[in-house]
Amino acid sequence: MSRPLVSFHDLRPGADDLAADVLAGFSRAQKSIPPKYFYDAEGSRLFDAITRLPEYYPTRTETALLREYADEIAQKAGTGHLLVEPGSGSCTKARILFEGLQPCAYVPMDIAGDHLHVAAQEVAVDFPWLEVHATCIDFTRLMTLPPDTPEGRRLAFFPGSSIGNFDPDAAVGFLGMIADMVGPGGQLLIGVDLKKDKAVLEAAYDDARGVTAAFNLNLLTRINRELGADFDLAQWRHKALYNEAQGRIEMHLVSRVAQLVSLQGRTFRFAAGETIHTENSYKYSVAEFRELASRAGFATDTVWVDADRLFSLHLLQTGNAHAT
Ligand code: TRP
Image (cartoon, rainbow, N blue to C red; front, side, top):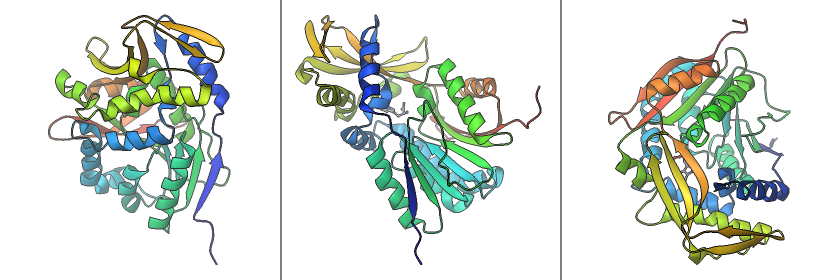
């Protein structure tokens, strides 16, 4: 008898959301586009290429930490959880943990539905003992678990320093959503990029080969295709800068000239040098992140940091059910 290796749940947002979010973002003094729209098929492919760039240290550093401490993580976190991963992408990092954690099921969640489908299926093939319940969802809004997931202690996994892509207050709100999802006594294993030298940070977000630039510019290609806009890609360039006061990398698309862009029957004016802000990536010290997590009701169990102090991995847990 064969059972389905992987179940797939589709709660993906529609094209209406993109139109509404882009129009709202372009109506502000500092124009912006929400970063979740990076991940169409080409964006997901380019993002995977970013993670392999020599300048982009976070992925290989975090991966090395997960490999080195996989046993210790399982010792501290326990085994047999329902393992839930918002923004699972290619599911590469969770694979490192399966053997030690022996989860009762794995719930990868991602906004990029087709990419998720393939990645989840590959996990199911490589780990035939593992139940996989993939969910295509905008996890920044909703963390609904599929109806057929087994009961069990919940461990959320949020690697990649994706928490840095929220502003600090929104990060507390999002961690609170995770705390609600895992429930009292639930846990979170989260990867957080550390503050460091400005040149190292800026190179990580503006590589010599221009992959990050292509990833950023692909947003405009997507908006042209899906919303019938007329962005001329040659008139835009990628920019990444470390804003030291705010402790964040900012990614922008810079208008090379004064230009008009039409989109859904509206016309937007861009001055020469004006930018569309596409993403922030906040960097934290270990102490700063610990404090942020505590504002969301998480206590720190263990923190692992690499020898060069580039990246941190935090195991957190929610308090018990009693009110304080
Ligand atoms: N969250 C990661 C980071 O901020 C990965 C990431 C998201 C990223 N968007 C990116 C990396 C754009 C490079 C470019 O580092």
